[in-house]
Length: 436
Image 1: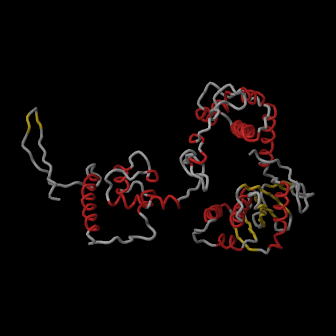
Image 2: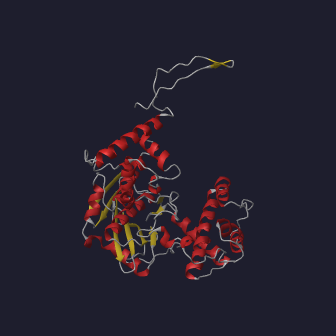
């Protein structure tokens, strides 16, 4: 500290410099100079520690088994240490992409050396996906970006629209300006769309601000199926006309409206939205797997307290071939189906003892299905009462038969009362497949 001296000040009044004086207070917390003082002291201590290590006077020690410094830089970016290290070593990027730099301190070298181990174990929940860079992040398990990134390949990529071949394929062209797309919107009678907006995000924002919910729904379904049709053309060489695409959009809209029909017809002809509040429904879930093709199917069946079949649903899962994960995911889908049916009280049953125990437990789960179990727990407040119970495989045959039949047909199904009056143990689904 001998190299530091106290600063002196003087006041200029009417062009005349007054006498010099020294402040009587040091740097306070939050002072802009505080981080630099920390750096000066930290660098000095780092040099002393390096010299002591070389001479064998000190040895390294593990400070914490569960709290590595690198992880704290990611989870607490506003801490003083994180802000100081970022300002010096990675001001224009994040810790994951930081470089060692020139003349690094011992502290930074120690933290940076463990960055690779930390990155290998990092994972994140995709959520909306808006925080993931498809060009930079390893969002495909087991593959590095340079292995599949077109920009790093030597082959030439055709940027022209695969439909019309007349314009560069960007978001505005695919969804607004391509002649096929223009014809699709015309056939859907979407005359109220403002096509003077040429930025796709401004266009979508305008739609959600200026249109009704039914119009927004039509646009969203249209965007989805237009993009799906484009992918079929590129990857499967399957060309669909504007008339076929517009018909697919209308059919899908009709199915959504059918799914939203909340009311159920009782045997006496009266209608009600939900079961009686004192009635407990039973939801059974099971799964079927095809390990060779990396496919699985979730089967969910809902019964009333009197044994009447309320609803059934089967869903195709792609690249979810682990039995453990599939059973947990099917349990989550069972809970979500109960929520969509507005059931106040449910008993969720499955033949995976481990999954049922984790659902019953209130402790935080850190296994491979921990994220799914947390989603189940976070949804439980949507019910007045919800319980989980293990049953034998033989008692869960209905859900498993539903999943097996859907796996054989490679087709999901969803049916609700009164459509189930003629239903048997291996259902014929009336819902068409979702767009890829």
